[in-house]
Image (cartoon, rainbow, N blue to C red; front, top):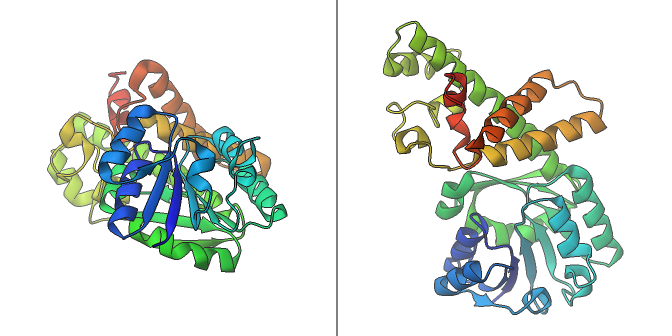
Length: 296
């Protein structure tokens, strides 16, 4: 039975661990949160006392961490993965971070003789719980193929986006587009409300005409048309506004570093920044419609 060392048992990490356990993997997990560790133990994971104990002797190490600084610390720190007995384990970072940090950490892994891929995910908590994430993977061909068996239990689609860091590049582009289209969808429904259009009628048009997009057809920001959308649950988050702001900032950072014109991406970041500053970071990102209605 293959052993996976799993670091990071948050909203995404814990359901991923559950699906890896269901697939027959032995998971040795670690998180700084005692509560997160206790919950993962209840799911059947072995809880390591520290990072080194989680990764030593593992066949693969998977990390799901909040930001680039955490990834750099976990892999490159004095007691990090690359100095803590990971040996020949395949390293898979599923965090969403900046492209440059992803490439820096992969270079460091290569210098140590380790194979590593960046593998950010899309699909939110619901996708993680269902094992239906879309995973964008960056890395050398052999490392990506080696990673597939460890990613398949948590995914519906795995896309090899190219070399090191390209998984993060694909995620930044995708989520910038998502932020832009969600604002556009919300603006359309707000205008429709002002014009006296019924939500169901506007949905029927936009979901079947040239305005069709995922933000409308699968995640409609008003209650009713798409029963599973957060709009039907008072915008309880599937993907928080705070996380959307983080991803839009990553996209803008990449755009600035690479001299790419992304005016709508910049405007989307500004709008979500105001929404988060008003205390709405824990709401689903589709709740931006409340801000556009003038409700803060």
